[in-house]
Image (cartoon, rainbow, N blue to C red; front, side, top):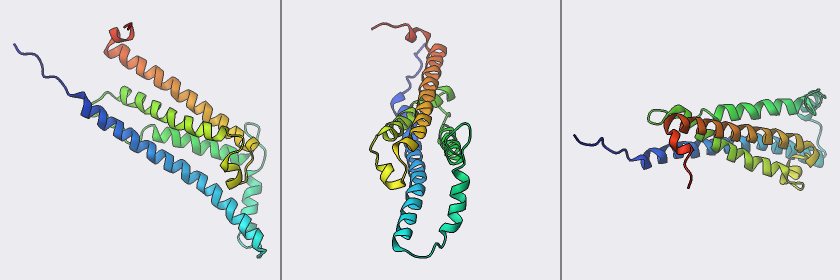
Length: 184
């Protein structure tokens, strides 16, 4: 009786890692696009006022800005709440983008994705934690106004780290329990 054929895991894991890298590139592009909206609005408003032209399209945007600037109990403003919803939706959506469970178990693939998203969100958290951030100049938002976004991204990063650790531990507990108790 012959032994079962050995599976070459290197190309399988490389393909999964490539899917994760592609998803993180899309995630970074989505966050960059969201930041670009604020930069474009701030820059165009600044330049429009600097030129001294008529109010033009900014009468309409002023009413939107006054609506989004209203205080709400759970956040500094209604605009922050909208931004939180968009941010958490992006994270939830990219948790499932380009997920291929045809070869590897879904719980392993999602655990790896949670780890990748945690690292991507950690970068955003560090960027938002800077006291003198380029976003302050580009968007007109001070560190104090960005601090709540920093806390939200930190919360999401922590949740993703816990999710990654729990799911990867559960996977190894189910698949290879002896590997959890190995000492080196």
